[in-house]
Picture 1 (tube, rainbow, N blue to C red):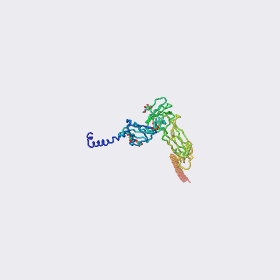
Picture 2 (picture 1 turned 120 degrees about the horizontal axis):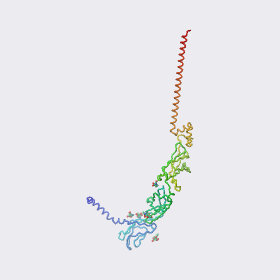
Picture 3 (picture 1 turned 180 degrees about the vertical axis):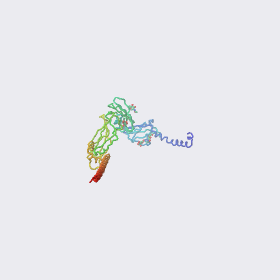
Picture 4 (picture 1 turned 45 degrees about the horizontal axis):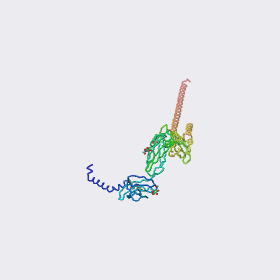
Length: 402
Ligand SMILES: *[C@@H]1O[C@H](CO)[C@@H](O)[C@H](O)[C@H]1NC(C)=O
Ligand SMILES: *[C@@H]1O[C@H](CO)[C@@H](O)[C@H](O)[C@H]1NC(C)=O
Ligand SMILES: *[C@@H]1O[C@H](CO)[C@@H](O)[C@H](O)[C@H]1NC(C)=O
Ligand SMILES: *[C@@H]1O[C@H](CO)[C@@H](O)[C@H](O)[C@H]1NC(C)=O
Ligand SMILES: *[C@@H]1O[C@H](CO)[C@@H](O)[C@H](O)[C@H]1NC(C)=O
């Protein structure tokens, strides 16, 4: 490094830098704003010229320009800006008559904080998130300080996210009926504290059910099967059961049909055959009837199963499943042909029948052929026997003495 520093090139660079910076030093000083002063919009704002001595005339600049908003300069050199609006913001500098910078300050204008409008979300028993909006637009950066407590308990911090203007409390004392949130907003012009009281069990509102699916049920013209998952922010624990509300209607209808269920899936059995349906699900804490329903899950569209292969309506499909099964069992000869169209297992049974029939048929033919052969053989034997007897009797007759 010493070698590098003493090298002529390096020295030249250092000399050049210090030379190029020197003439602008005054300029830099002029930009050095010693602080920020906050002022109220639509009020008179007084900017002091540092330690300027009374009676010495001073010159004020805004953003390096001598053009100033409506103002007056007092005897001690202070600048009074009258009835300021946003255009009066900027860097103010005051100089003495020799052009020497005496003081500079950055002016920011706005309003002191007002009360906050606060709302809290309770997506499960272990989490509270409170968000707020300013009731007054302050135009100024603010700091927030939030704390939270149950009735008669110690204040605990509510962890603030300044960007999103919300704060979080984990594991609130859910058994306490009333809770208080205190948010303190501070800006350059003042501070304001807002208190809200609320009942966690009434604010409890799960997130909507997730992975909601609706499917047709093959073979049924009026059925739909709806399934979903618990919201991922809801603990999967027996202590926190949810009840689910399913609603559905044919597309274009005004009226919803409803089903309540504790478990997924649910079968809708009175859908309108051939129509597109809208289906949604929401959830609520099952135990706490004062809690709130979640938002509805996004609308899903689905049409019940249709017999695409057969244009004419199939009466079997209108029957409930038990009737359907019993009719199938008692009247196989009438339903098998129809069922074969939708049940891929059934054609195998038909083939089996055919095979049995073929086997039986061949057995019958074989038996017939065998019996025929047997009959022919027996006849032949009889005939042979008769011929032998004839011959014998003829021999006897011939041997008999005539
Ligand atoms: C601002 O100053 C002007 C002139 O001195 C005065 O007339 C006016 O009342 C002042 N306004 C306020 C809000 O103080
Ligand atoms: C005002 O001063 C600040 C701080 O020195 C500087 O960053 C800013 O650029 C200045 N603005 C103008 C318009 O001079
Ligand atoms: C002075 O500069 C500030 C930014 O630093 C700007 O907002 C303001 O409008 C400027 N004021 C004037 C009078 O140019
Ligand atoms: C927040 O407010 C409380 C009481 O209002 C105070 O004790 C605490 O110091 C404040 N914290 C901050 C970071 O301002
Ligand atoms: C409760 O909800 C919060 C916010 O969605 C989540 O971060 C937290 O994990 C949830 N708690 C449980 C036990 O699921």
